[in-house]
Image (cartoon, rainbow, N blue to C red):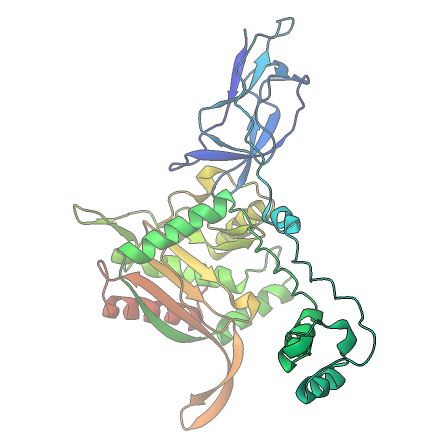
Length: 393
């Protein structure tokens, strides 16, 4: 019995899927459960398994095609079964590219100069002066003055005709949106339009965090927590005391979420993904470090599953590794807050009546003003700062 291979639904709001590649060719034998194709969602590239064993045939989608979810893109025939007739979507008409269209345009051809006239050419003094300056042969010009005499205007027109035609401007290059870039754009636009953002920043002395990391290195720990791991730990623990920042806005009211699921923004080649560490407040520093590394590696290899980036309640975005001192981030809906983290850098700071050089970092909280006020955001940052600057991990 023939089994349809359809474009699967891999995300909650997914309408289309982009076929990245076929892992089997038309006519190949396949086994149920083995990787059949790679599909790009708004967040990752996912391997899709074969729904049945048999022979792959009637492939109607090629790599790069965007296909509505649920649409058949191939058929798997049982062993010994003959191929039936299936309708194939019509191929899209190929439109000439802007560059090809530009190439077909030709510059206007200058008029051929009149044949040289014998004898002395009648020309006005101004015409002779301009012709001498511009290197124009008066005998090659057809005069428009009395008795076919060459005027200054005739020489000027000849000078302009000798100028090379301006090169045709190059056509703008259109880079097609990936599914990820399109969805990110839609979500961020919706966030800024619907949630009134406000921003609060605080400076943190990271000297104690640096000491703890050095201590872990000296002990040759199997896993040395990164600076971001300490920040994740501080955010998760602080959120327990600020439930309004671990919530979402609904028409019925503010929905407080009991689980603290931290989204960790990870930059990849195609954009930004936010995998989620679930129940982050219940994890030790070492467990958080292991979880964040595992998700980051899966993100870089484009092997995140839909479950890996769904259900986040609060996001941490760190651009410190790019030398950024501070920035403000857009809230990731339906969450109500996001923490933006800059680099740890040596700064001159007051130390009582003296000055000192310390390892400092700036954190900025973006929050939804429908849910939280400035005082709540400030107290959250102050509490997270105390955890990072304190002796406890």
